[in-house]
Image (tube, rainbow, N blue to C red; front, side, top):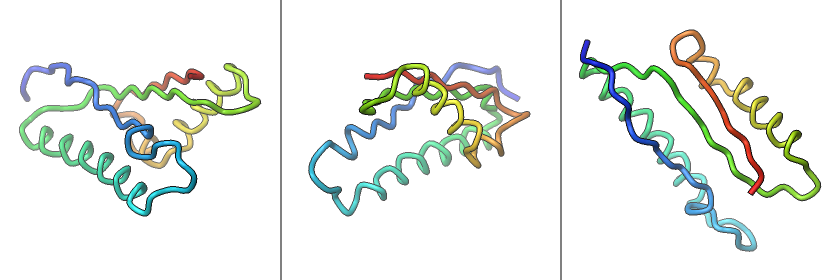
Length: 102
């Protein structure tokens, strides 16, 4: 196995693929899925090359009317813990999430 190195942050910003406009563009979900799929495919390619992902950190920034910082952070943690992909990673990859109101 190759020496572990840090891989730079991958940003999947909903603000860039789903700008705040009335309604949603038909391709928005496809763009989000493509960004996520690309990240998973890249991880697979790196794994084939002998690299191993040791941790995954997700940063969530959002605006939710009527919610406070504590509730937003809890929602981010609950989403991480309930995510099927997170559950598949548990025990193999250290997972963390940071939720902050924008």
